[in-house]
Length: 101
Image (cartoon, rainbow, N blue to C red; front, side):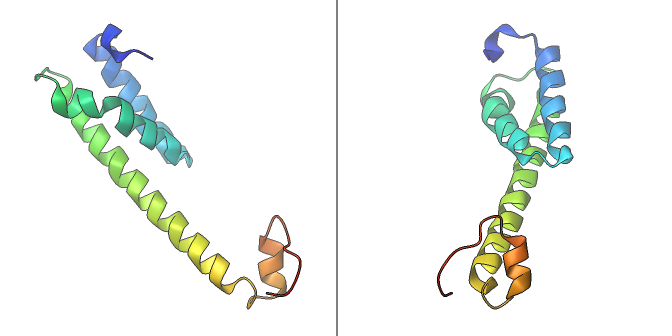
């Protein structure tokens, strides 16, 4: 999508939709929001909607950072303790690895 062709009001609307969509357990939308709108929020000359876009981009970045932290922590804990959890660890696994832990 080329953001250059959109008027500023539509950019704000799109940025807000991606920000709110991230709360539907879709943190990838926050990543897209940060990547797409960073230039509009921080590098372009000032325009009226820019302050709101900045707010959505900053909050999207914080939400994304939170999700990355939580998922990294969970994956690390699970990989480290899966064998010790025994049957519960196997039930949480989509694929049960073969061999000894």
